[in-house]
Length: 478
Ligand code: DSN
Image (cartoon, rainbow, N blue to C red; front, side, top):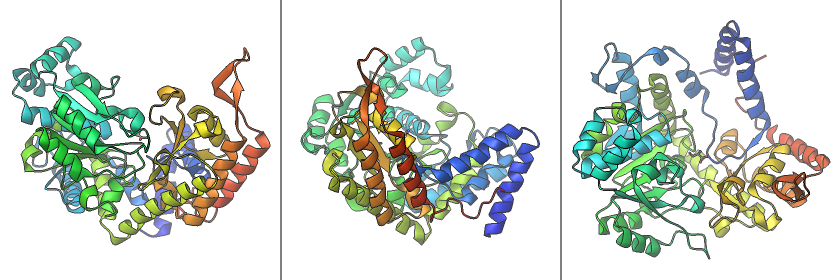
């Protein structure tokens, strides 16, 4: 697409929206302006291509398509079949998987599809068969307990949330923690790294039906070959949630023991993080689980989102191009440059560095909670999110960590020099912020004090850093 065509497309779209509800058009334009101006370091976010964004804004949104390609519960799905088949084909080719299911609307949906596929494959349960005929959301609490009794309180072993795992891997307030009798493995307190011997020991003791690997805040590679051996040693199904690092797998930065696809029985992912596609999810598996995975809708999902599947096909096609491998490598190079810059300036990093796309700063070294640090950085034009660190004394709300990631800034074109400058800006803000007090004068985990002149100066430097790397440079909304 020519640069002119991109600009015309987005301008025309906004003009049409503005004709109906100008406030929505204004909010869309304001979102682009905000994203252009902010130093976005949220590890789970990215910037999808204009082609991916445009593939979502069309009449595919109007179509119901429950079922799978060629076996729909609605007539007239021939064009949806085309885009779903294309997205699945690109996914299979990109990741070397024998089966891809591209309907999940999000990461949790992808994980629920995988959980139910594994249960259906492994457990004989009349209640489960009954449940499969209905939407999961229709089940009452009593139904859930009956189902769980019949399924024998199946067990799941996943990485704990504070060690970097994800809430859908069995965290109690999440449905996964209610579906399963769950136990978690953590990281070595001395190194912050996964201790595979401890995982094996937990697996031997607990004998899970499912062993889950994957993370949202662990800054290191995981050895999936070893994890598979552990799963096999206790007869568990090995599932990997690669949502955060799918782009690094697609770009062949994670290969061999670190590529989950050849080692796991089933792999789930989102499509919008390092993979740089539209918001959504996906499941990859071998032939054994394919039929059950394809029952995702209606077992777990509502009608598929054909417009998003069209965008997944576009983004996956982009990820198959040779330049995506270069992009994926630059994500990791940038994360390492950022980590080195922070370490040189005295920051404490969980595990002492990174070998993926993210860095986890333990901000207790600056005398701050994650919440204080997050807000002070935001005041200074740096967008991050607070995150627990292992054995976090401040819990999941205030936390002691700041998670930063490089997929988005790498998409804009920033490199090692800009990462070092970013480390300097982060360090400046964190070292000049002090904890504040509440109205009663008591220490507060949320309040903080940062000289507005420092915030303004850092904000200006952050904006200057971005100036040579415009976001969506071809798009001029006028
Ligand atoms: N919320 C995503 C993240 O930020 O890691 C994961 O679901």
